[in-house]
Length: 392
Image (cartoon, rainbow, N blue to C red; front, side, top):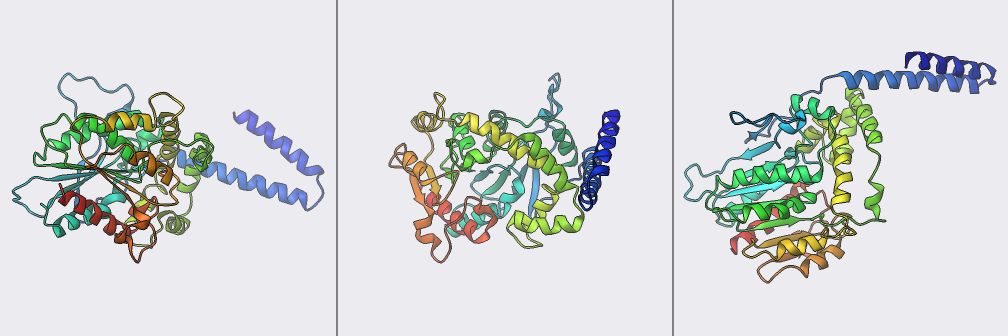
């Protein structure tokens, strides 16, 4: 490789020598710039990732790091598979509550649990306002998005986990959490997390602990080819290159870049999480793209038993939990076309809401797909979830 680089450099210099000024200087400038960029990427790729953000105030880790193995249980062949989904927990406000109620939030892609903490706090407040038992809130992350330094280093060297693998791992975690709340366990999935929640209903429906409500927030349930979704299928190698470039930037540039990426000001939770994950841990952006590639394949309606035909089989299960589905206009991942498709699969005990026309959004713009980045929208949507729960 070094020999080829030397040959290439000599060749470029020879070409540059015959070019007239200022083309010669411009070519040499870009050569120097390319060398500096390449060196920065190589250095960044060899660095160990830093530790990600700590839990927000009031939150603690429920699960983080490698899964504990029972005696005699074999280690995973791929070390990345040995890391379980990270789970952040906000304890119930009532220390000695008569009822043990839990609420689990399953993120979309990216599955970094910290982004959903403010939404979790608003749900807890909304439950209190409705006179419901103060719930314990869980934000369940994905295997692809570890924030601990050890997990980030291992994931950076591994291929992204598929949607099926994520669904299996998160489903196992949800069943474990459900067992801690015999009086009720609400599950909310956002975007592709809603698809994971539907898959999990097959597991939690058999548990002794009831699931009084399953919430599908802006659910991404079916891939739409030849739409804007197709443009998001960038090559994984390009995503890795961009990720290494972003994490190699100077600190001041990272601080500026975190503003548009997080859609939040400095000092906010979303800003801090974005800065300490996507701009410090290269695997995060690669995982977004790698996971999305498998989402497209798994949700492709052209394949038998996928898309809304799969949703139909799940929603027709006997004794399944009631469903609250939330949509908004202008959503690329959960378009209004899917609103009507899903509405035709739901029963009288379910609810489906167009947030862009709902009275609770009065005075606010219609929420975007990434509503968790807006505290006001989190508050309004949490109120809808709590009001639906109060009817059960």
